[in-house]
Length: 223
Image 1 (cartoon, one colour):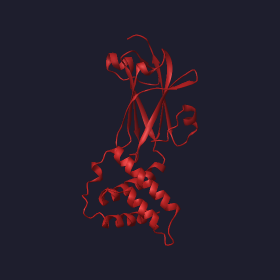
Image 2: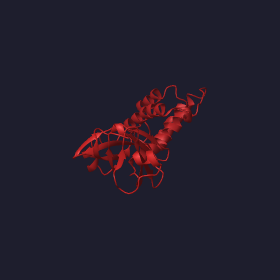
Image 3: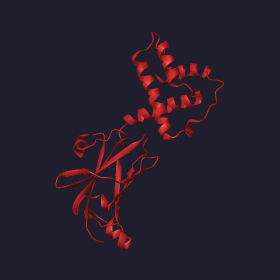
Image 4: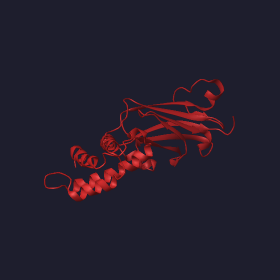
């Protein structure tokens, strides 16, 4: 089903909902958008597999769309349709290049000066490793990360604090306590499209759709 065919089906829905209030799609939370979009996407995919003889939505699919969008005004439905198709196309596009800048650790904690070079960033209790990942161009669509700590060839996913901007920049804060044991480690960030980041580091290293960043760190036991 094409975007035009989808909007025609929604137009039919509009004629049945003229008396309904039309709230803006922007008033919905991201979670609500995702749920409604998932319902609409399911109908789009089913409709594309069963087109009518002229390429229009066949009656059973029109009824399914009407049922799935019951109670959702046209303005919201049309906005969701456009938002959905844009997001789905964006999710297929490769990510732009990213740059990662690391800061934090005991040196920042004590002197306020950022760590320089590729020497291990020293982490002691109460300090953290801050990783800033900036895209070369703004990113359309949602992204996510997984962070692993690697020592002696063994990788463990660790819990971190993460913030993602609307343009795809990511800030990750790794507290010293997230590093499993004292010693030297490699902190590895895997960045990819939301829902498409492999669970294991080994799988991520074979996946060309994700980006992998590494930073050496050393956890000490005392401040």
